[in-house]
Image (tube, rainbow, N blue to C red; front, side, top):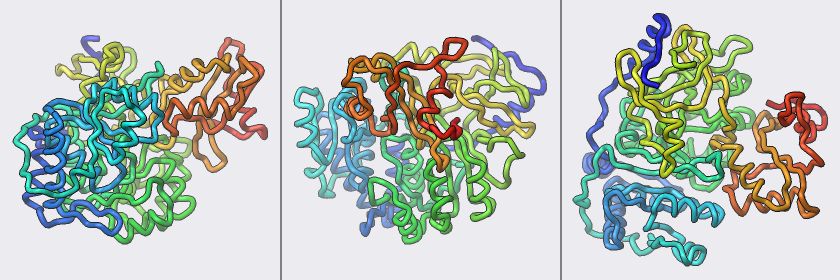
Length: 529
């Protein structure tokens, strides 16, 4: 597609919402930006973890010591270096150390199954891995061409200065892996410039040297990009959540004790807080939430409890560096309408497109994104790159665009309302999941003849993955199927429930009858999405 057709009303509204240009340090790397902060705010607290406080000076020294060790191990500019460390000051220092080497960091999780972890390391071309579990990983992957470096040998701050490496703004800063429909996870590389675009001149939250931001997301989840670099590139404070999993009582204590100003919660966790302990978030100035479509019922409760100008809905795919749109929630949408995902954030452009033309207000189309937040593509998947990334002329300007696969429409004021997916991708607990990837692994199970994976709604209004399988052998049981998936997929991609069926019911058009299957999961006839 070379050019989008544009009606006058559609073009006028798209021009209005895409006036998002703001100055930001587009010519500097994260290494330069952080080292500038470390010099300017040397004695300020950069990291809080449990009862430990780490200043910018100490964090920079620790990162320099780790970088020196990685360089001694053979790290080179533009390498990909794995990071497998529990949430701690050492984790943040390791991410910085990789960037100081001029390399890109690849966050991985030791809890991932061997098959997935090995595939991610191999697919990314990772040769070095900095970790707090070197011995364990070496035993798990004796034949893997990856050298584990133990952070225990680099804990001393040492006297190392900032490495002389000079990564550019268009070099890769990190790689996140997301679910892939073919059964193969997709590597999404992100540039230094893209992270700077996310956190400087932010429209969705105040980020400066007074910001205190909670980091609770897994570092392999793109929300961590905002949680870490939002404060640390401004001289603010990053508060590390002390436990692997969030508990409301502990969350409340951490937010109050450390006077956290900004927090991001996935939609599911936000709903739980609103239902069970809304006072948890009372001390927080800005509550960001997103990752799934919002429940208007929970938004109504939140507005009543927290008031206006504190709650902000955010939306964005990994391919656009964490956030692409924001919507300050000041009032409820009209009855029967969904909460908008809002307007583009700074230095981001959004288009709603249908059949090669820009959509006017009320017309449903696919959401396309543009701007410096876009990833350069997918690692080693040229077909996926061609399918999702394109260049075309819009209003006389050549734009590189990302097709999100999300459907939406513009309101008269330019805010965008999400209308579902064009494909089989879902969001569960904030994680982006391709149902086809789960189905792929089910189809590889010799005990399974047929399978179907979908999302069901819980009594509390949350979402869970549910699988339905037709057995090929008597060994096909719910527990056996789940054990097989646990050995191949991260925990968040393993269906919470597996139902064994004699056959998959079909509709009159020959498609799997999802509604009929869900009656097995909801025998009482409870509704599902």
